[in-house]
Length: 227
Length: 379
Image (tube, rainbow over the protein chains, first blue to last red):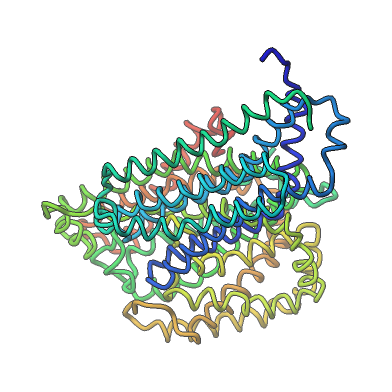
């Protein structure tokens, strides 16, 4: 690949995605602060409500990020305008991937950090760190798959299906984790235990996420034209 | 440029410098040093304060809780004003960069150092003092336990930096979600209505915590602290460019002061002599909300008149206030631990502890900050 990337324009497109996403991001940050404050109350009802709100924020954030920058733009036929810019398909793909990863990655990273602070600094058992990371790992995987589908498939129906199905699978994952003694028992203890099943699941989540993103970048990168 | 905690010159939009706000903020931080020093002799906090002396005086409890209800609200109000000023001059990214340089980095550096030095001084005092405070006795027993669990980490007296960062984020959220209109409408009601409604806004926050309210030292945001300090920060933001609207409160100053004093007397009566765990009752929370809201506004109105002229000593105080506040607690604790076994009367101990702490802070400011690159961060 000896193509020269138009980095200034890629940067501008990423900033554009970021600015268009700011309102939703602000709402998610607000909801995230409320969720963390609820968790900080260290009461069972507040913990349940705070965790639920965190998951809602994460899922909504990932769906809005993809929907805003890809599906809405496709519907509004922004691509025709983008094609008039001095951009190659690879530039466009990289800008879309970077913009999406930024708008999803910032709230995801902040909430992940906040969750770890909650678990490690409140009376909650520290073993929940592994459990939380596995749930965050799933959200990351669901997002990567949804992003891959959104960039590959134009059908809005299939995209909606991919986003809902991949994120809803967090429920069976939570049930599955509860069934695996090597994960569920240490989650109630005050020590962080990385059991083999936990390491395998988290590794699979991270590797599959990277594979999905890598495949998308590779597939679009080799396209000679926008269509 | 006058270095300050927010690195924002306290300017009106027309470029006029508002010295009074720099001075008020410096005095609010200085009041914090006096407040923390006085707690060692408070009967109410005797079981809970690490540096509690065996001598204590009810006079302290009669005096300290009023400034406690005012100094940090005033600080956050001024901080909100400065943020709005900085936002106008440098935009949101400029404000964010400044927050990182002046608040986040000093916080990340000072936090472990302060935590470690307080822990070391407290550990030494628990072992070495002949007349330890009840809390030091607990620490002594805790240290003797073979499998003692470490207490959860907290921000200590640096919690205000944590909340300045949080309010910075909420400021951005409010701006992006275009919530500024709500503030404008609130202010458009007129300052007397703002003054009347402010205690109502603060009331739920005070009801969500104990009385007197503790420092929100946890790493996670706490609803009560957001509810108590957030409205002051927001009011500070809204007052940017509208300080003259406070003139309408001048006639109201004297009756409000009397109302605050009456409310404070009732608050002290409700407080009793023993600290009751659990959230404050709604009536006590209402008294605190009234005192915090009105006394803070009264200080602001009074300060804008009385502290308006630039004065060299106040300017120096303002410049060194950030460093002094960051440094004071470990020094104060160490000095008060050393004083614990002495048979001095408590006023002498108090005066010595405050003087020695301030001298050490100012000397260290002169040597380490004033003429060094550190000035950029904590000067």
